[in-house]
Amino acid sequence: MEEIRVSPDYNWFRSTVPLKRIIVDDDDSKVWSLYDAGPKNIRCPIIFLPPVSGTAEVFFQQVLALSGWGYRVISLQYPVYWDLLEFCDGFRKLLDHLQLDKVHLFGASLGGYLAQKFAEVTHKSPRVHSLVLCNSFSDTSIFNQTWTANSFWLMPAFMLKKIVLGNFAKGPVDPKMADAIDFMVDRLESLNQSELASRLTLNCQNSYVEPHKIKDVAVTIMDVFDQSALSHEAKEEMYKLYPNARRAHLKTGGNFPYLCRSAEVNLYIQIHLRQFHGTRYAAISPEMVSAEELEVQRTNLSNNSESDDES
Image (cartoon, rainbow, N blue to C red; front, top):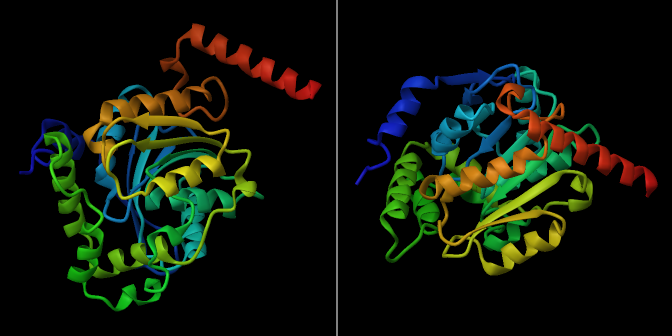
């Protein structure tokens, strides 16, 4: 069953959006792979960060839909980084290379955690304008793996894959979710030992997000009500950490709603990004926004600034 891999949408994505490889570190082995679609004159795009098992391709449905609506979308895959600060430094260099001052980040699971840490590390010179956190977490201790984090580099690839597959949904799921799991297993198979070991290390190294450093970043928390790798406690912790965040709930979707519930996910992303239309941080081409909507946005912005002045 490889429904997604042979689907017209996926084949259209692979044939129309080129994969770019970029090196920004002194170490030539650290290669960022990314798809960049939509108008290149947009300086504040939305960037997608994959989970442990994912590659840049897993967000192909978001890349196609959002770029079709006029947004600039970048989906990327990180090189091997063993340390959070090293990752943040590499990601900052990548944004510099792409000449992007500030960006919106969509992160799934580990991707969401890395997005929060990057926003936190760069808070004195902010590079993140907003966050969409999908099935994500704020504290690595929820996985109870902090004691093994330093030994992942020693484990063979098949063992690491077994650890990751242990978090995939078990039992009956609907056909779209089954296709999403098959596609993610296929993506997992494409990762080598060091890629997997480094991601698991970042995922489980003893660390947590300091929310007071990113309190000015607009956040949307996206999660599912059915079975996923995240515990109920981990979700509650995210709500507590970001009390003012918008919430985007999906009734079903499992671990990979961006693949099996892409229409709903894309709609929530649009709603999140709409608050920036008409500002310098818009991720969409101005021609794609109606005059009426821009007028509403400007009115809201002036009202907000007046209320800020009064307070």
